[in-house]
Amino acid sequence: MTAKDIMETEIPSTLQAKPELAKEIGSVIHFNITGDTGGTWTLDCTKDANWVTAGAEGTPKMTVSMSEADFVKIRQKQLNPQMAAMQGKLKFKPMDMGLAMKLGKLLG
Image: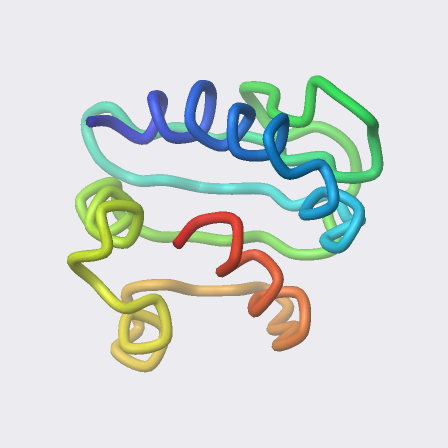
């Protein structure tokens, strides 16, 4: 599993199955994933479909940064997102706790 798989396949299929999650998040979020097969993606939950695009598009309400290894571990439930944030492995700029919690429902 790679960050690209998660961002371009798993997250869109989760949002397709649960469109209420996109409405709840209702923001543009940039993901900066570091590592060999990392990259930058935009999650735009203000739209009704095509939520994820490669690259940084639009003005984000928040930017999420982490390594690809940690991103995969969070997705596979091997790493608790709250612990990752406290350990500095998962960073939010600016920190919006409400939005981060909503995002957790999508990623976890």
